[in-house]
Length: 420
Ligand code: GLV
Ligand code: MN
Ligand code: MN
Image (cartoon, rainbow, N blue to C red; front, side, top):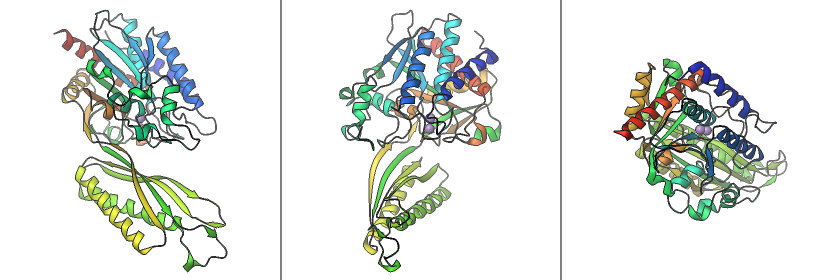
């Protein structure tokens, strides 16, 4: 059944326009997991599922699911989806593009009375973005059994406990100590996402087919000095935590640059979150807390970075009045996408006449978690200037529609495979 790009583009555009309004007003586009706007967006999404006649559930990990049941008596399921939460002051397409593409895919299937030999589920994975609880991909980790009591018991700055928030949204945190039963029935997990980089745009390629997703590590670094009067404590008498923190920030940047230059594999590290206490112009900073974000395709490069940084921290601790502690707070391993699904995505994209590129992801995704327990793969579509995690993030709706057509073709291919 042909997929009309123009017709579907206007559907996609309308839904993007709906969702972009659900943002904290003072800092578009912000829809943090468990926030008021996030709950509003979940209600909006349930309404969309209703309009499509899907049955709606929330699983134990708090993922919102719309299910199109097959007429065949089967438990087998193909999952499409992404996330509707955002980073603070993020964009309108990261995650959203994949969820809306899933809605569009199901609309097309329903309107054309297409019968599938498996159930088709659309997931809004709970809280994909890094949050105040120091973990990303809450819902997809939950499916994979990758949440533990340490993570679930964490509190955010307002004292909210992660497991209680999961329960409030309809999950059941007690059952998250192992992979969810659904994994036995998953035939494929598919995700469409904006690339968040510039490769597709620069090379004028329609579709990126993801080969791998890098490991992601996050470390909390605490630098303890001594707060004091900025007018009276002489320069040689200070233990200024921010000055020592700045040494770490520069060191991390230089070290990551060096390692990435020496390796032809993806390697980046960033310190993008820093809290200075008490954060007052007339007080010497007594305490700094910051988070290191590290993404690596090579396990050796990751280890080299950690060892070298730990040596630097030990040397500062021996020779400096400020003391530094580094704690591992989150880890997601390097994963490869399912090879058969990669080949099938390539076949789909080729058969529709789209150019494609098999490529590595730089960002993390829910599909990385799902690939640990089920066949999973994802596609990228171009985004303007490679910008993402910022309000300027932009993707053409026609590109989202093209990606949705590839997803639809994949579903057809999977249906044919299931029938044979
Ligand atoms: C997900 O958005 C990430 O931080 O890679
Ligand atoms: Mn995303
Ligand atoms: Mn993101």
